[in-house]
View 1 (cartoon, protein in one colour):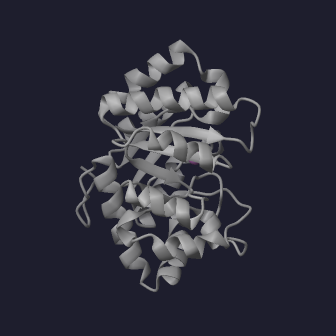
View 2 (view 1 turned 30 degrees about the vertical axis):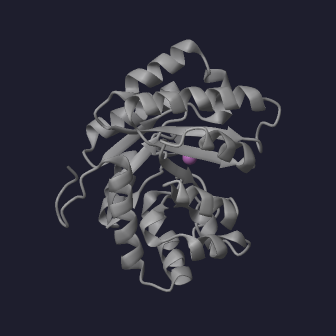
Length: 262
Ligand code: NI
């Protein structure tokens, strides 16, 4: 049973065959999915999917690459969606200095405003940190009561250690299967099983051997298998731990073995 805590099911890449793809991933053992919104329109779509499928949940947030959506109206809409019964986190939020290195202060301000919303609603956050490790950590340190996941964690083992000490979870995606994933073994060596989340970031970041093709949550097993290999355990153990971790962090009832999500 797999829980993909990060898949953009609302993405345009799935428009032509979304229902069929969702049927197939269920058959592949995916029991729960969280669809993190990136700006108001994708948040609305993710919310609609969560209403149509009881096993899909969503997160509401404005992604750092969507700075043009940083308006009072969009933030108000994010706050309204955060009160939706299937909204389990504020995300995907954070800092991205890879795509946009010119608006660091604007990104930080938007990140902080959305952290404040998460704390107000007592929701965890889903953090996007791309080439902004130092600033992300510095901001997180300012909110010791905040919890969440560093999505597609790409920091050092030292950074992982600090996040784990602060009660955070680490998300692992397709890149753990890439040959050049040098830091992953060190990070996984210090990350206990009870802090690992499995994510695909579909439709992006397809794992080996699906690299270069559209990603979907059915590929979570490749990520799970690689982590099991690095941790010296079975894929079943990793999948079960990640499912439990995701349900704990996001406040979701663990689905019965053959039943539907609650
Ligand atoms: Ni994402």
